[in-house]
Image (cartoon, rainbow, N blue to C red; front, top):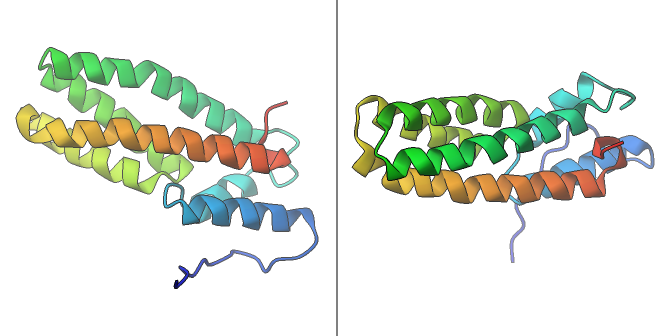
Amino acid sequence: MSSMPVHHAKPPSSSPESVDNVSESTAAQQGVLNPEAIRRLRELDPTGESQLLSRVFQAFETSLNRLLPQLEQARTTADAASVRLVAHTLKSSSATIGAAQLSKVCAEVEAMAQESRLEAAASGIELILAEAQAVRIALRNLTASDPAAGAA
């Protein structure tokens, strides 16, 4: 079985930074989170004292809890404008936390909704819902495996 190469921003060591690399690598291997985006977020709070990563993840989860039901409602009522707005909002926040695939699917659905092509967007909406769940799990796993990312 061949393994996928994982590129670390820093070489593994016995320092706390090695935990970052392991956590980021695990998320990357899951194919859900971009380790480079996580690394950039960590750089904004290098000591972890402000718990920025945890706060960003919690804000994203709160956003998902609000937006996914709106997306499902908009799909049910064939509200293209609402589908577009939700997809647009999720596209940006997903990119911020490194959920590149979710962001990409959101961009595609946003474009279709802009053109009122909701039937064409149906499979993309399903992908958003599935990928959002995968991102939730990856964020929870990252938080659980990395004390610096965990909640206070």
